[in-house]
Length: 108
Image 1 (cartoon, rainbow, N blue to C red):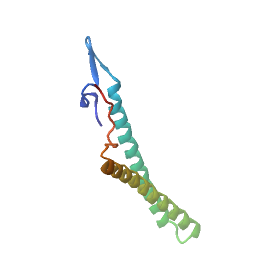
Image 2: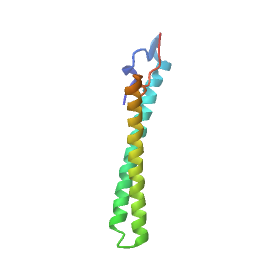
Image 3: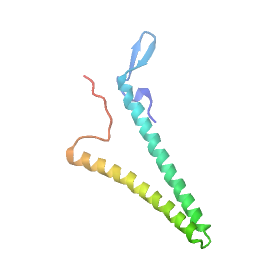
Image 4: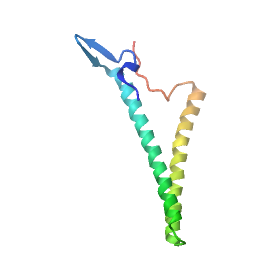
């Protein structure tokens, strides 16, 4: 997680107080993105655990096995979507030269 002092020009000294400027949105956006990706990874890990547990405790019941398979399938699809989105962003960045994976607010 980043803090206000990581971005130059984020804090403006007004008298005795440092006031955040619009440049601080870079940090807010970055921190929200880190939390969102971490929560998604945690959710996918939990889905794998639940799917594996359902599969192990199915006991040959076709409905339970189908439910476990669908849970594991959705977890794999989630991982593929996350990896695919990251790969697409990196490919666009590589071919265009535009750093789209870095959120910056331009200043003078």
